[in-house]
Length: 153
Image: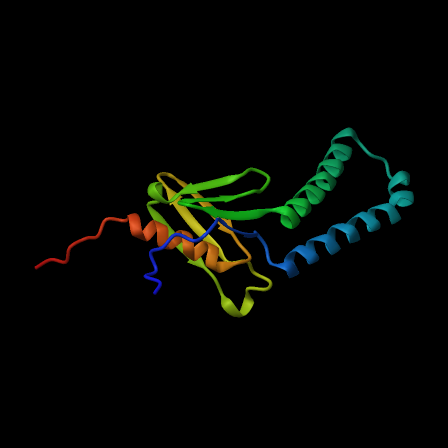
């Protein structure tokens, strides 16, 4: 019989974003690149200053970079540590968490990734996971470590 307090056999791992969102990110980035290539003749005729060229280039790089991370970002729960790969990696330790908030709308989980707001001291971090069980598993580990307050008598 499972008592509910057993450790899982191994780490839990899932994409950070649902499949539909990852496909949509690829489609949008490809569309923007194709549109940019189609616009090259018109863009060559425009007069560009260095700041405008830098801004245009930075915007293009940012779009491709964020699209890449939406597709390849992963969330992992190993023991008491929750991590998510992203442009910068996120990490939370269940023993250091002071507050949690799970945001999950089951009817919309195909287009809005379940997410967990984690407060560790003064810092607040959002973790996304296509699999809400991974986030609730971490929340359970945090709850196991929280001190219980006694009711007033």
